[in-house]
Image 1 (tube, rainbow, N blue to C red):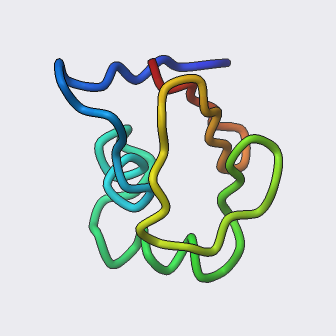
Image 2 (image 1 turned 45 degrees about the horizontal axis):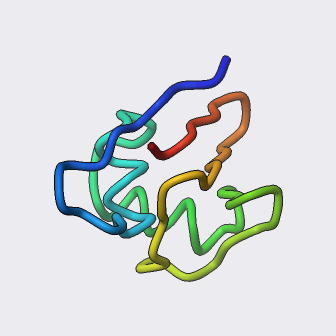
Image 3 (image 1 turned 90 degrees about the horizontal axis):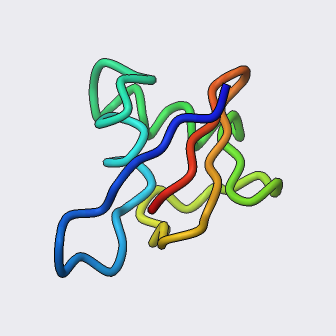
Length: 71
């Protein structure tokens, strides 16, 4: 199921590690970084290993069965 994550007014991006934490896919920032380091997170269908990757409107993030589009 695709979730939607809405950026705040005036925000151009959110860092990947913060996004997956705010989505509730992980419990801590450390867990978020570990999931990224372990190549468990995809951005627009490609494995993403940059913890602080800027995720922008229209991007789709996937972790296992979880999927979210940034708006």
